[in-house]
Amino acid sequence: MLIKDKEFGEVIVRKSPLARGVRFSVSTSGRLQMSVPKYTSDFLAKRFLNANRDAIRSKLPLRNPDEQRARDYQKKILMKKAKDYLPYRLEYYAKLYNYQYEKCRLTHANTRWGSCSSNRTISLNIGLMKIPEVLRDYVILHELAHLNHMDHSKAFWAEVGSHDKNYRNHEKKLKLFSPGL
Ligand SMILES: [Zn+2]
Image 1 (cartoon, rainbow, N blue to C red):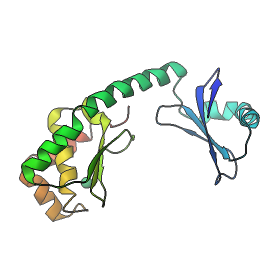
Image 2 (image 1 turned 45 degrees about the vertical axis):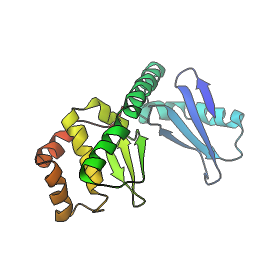
Image 3 (image 1 turned 45 degrees about the horizontal axis):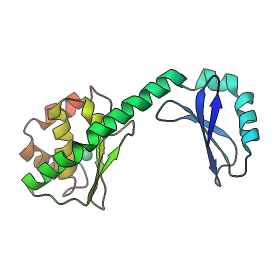
């Protein structure tokens, strides 16, 4: 559910059977997010919001409503670019180096460029579309190598290095960017 709030913009309300009390947090778009017990009425949720307004304002790094919408727009554009590019680039390298993965998932988490799960799903962050191509390719090769090594062992890095000789440099440069939007 969404509450439209004059100060905070769209507030995301999550009703959860596990929630004991009310918790406030920040969503990836910079919106205020409330988790409340399952049977909390909308009226009550708004009351909690009003009662905690000062604390929310001073403690949570929220984006203002204009910035939230700008970020939505940026994300939409990036997602479209990513959809038209990342799955194909992944497929290209998988074919080139003989890797078999199950599926490619696009994510927009704030923390990780990519991941590879034990069921052979490779997740790639749409934020990859904002960084130089060599680094983007490095992330793809890194995740592909995880199909054979689910750790960061010597054998893993040797495999990454066999596809990307400059991987150390690329790993370092990647830290200059953030996957978040
Ligand atoms: Zn890794």
